[in-house]
Length: 451
Image 1 (spheres, rainbow, N blue to C red):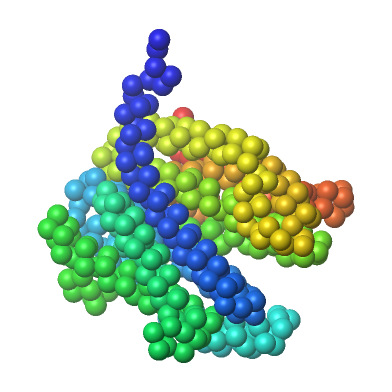
Image 2 (image 1 turned 135 degrees about the vertical axis):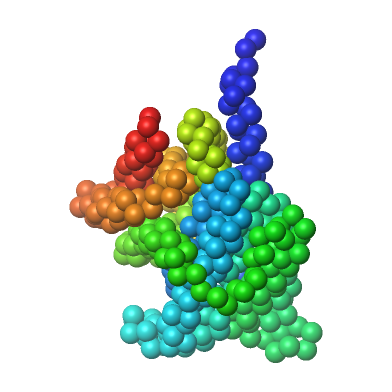
């Protein structure tokens, strides 16, 4: 009986998975940091949970934009390493770190003076005060968090994905321990609620940064890059190159997250139960999306390496393999959603929750629609990763902005409120935006590589 896939596919799939699986695990662990904060603040109190959730949404908006520089470092390092250009590896990584620090300093005032902004947006004064205190503290962690992302990209591009995984996993347990001490007030420390969660997050980022820096600086195989030697010296040419590549990546990611934020706002117009079901469905899809994100990162590295070697045929083969794996994962995920949607949604609610009978069926419906959402989202994420691998980011930004803001959001509004599909209409609108992005981005990539 013939093998279901040709030998060439299997060997390339092993290369994608060797890079991708640890990165998937790392993204899952990163997601777990957010989940543990949410759960532990929920145990502490509803007010602190609301303030923490509000603060986290603001934090991640700024953080998402800033991660564009880390995402630029990954293909630049992969390409330079494949070309055996150690100097360019160092220049790209170092200026990625510089830009991350400069960006963190530029946005810090927004965190420090966030309380008046939250009040101006119509938030409850108590929530605004606590959310502002949370943001003033966690804003100090933007720089370390972005530097962590740059180092993760640097190490992943050099094939050091295992350390990226294990450092992130350890960070989850450190975060749980610090939350236990600082949120609830254990070991003689006063209970600080949401403020404690913010301090814990900053400390976790600092510990993670120290661990990755130590590994990158002292591992014998990596010493040749002399990453921190004369770190204070600017390299304006490399800084411009990283900024030119990274800023569009960050803006494209912000455009996508903005569509999700807009959908949550519009879902809130339909009532608290719809918003709760929507939030649960988004948490489920975000968890499974980590698989696509890890595969997309692996595709970026492999395509970047092939580009550095001048191996166009290998670049195309790596792209086809990564895209096929992403579609297979999406197909498996669709089956999980169809067969286990009610179980997944129900796991987020207490068995004796009085609104469970309404939220679970509604959330299950959203998850069913999300089965197709997952396919579109996986394909657009893979297309973005492939385009980053060939260092094409400006046109993808334009495609993302048009797809999410001129197609996804208007389609969601029209289907939900004009056509009367309500919450399902908002999800169909997101699918329309993601599908448009996936098709346009994939077409651009295949044209760029001559297919």
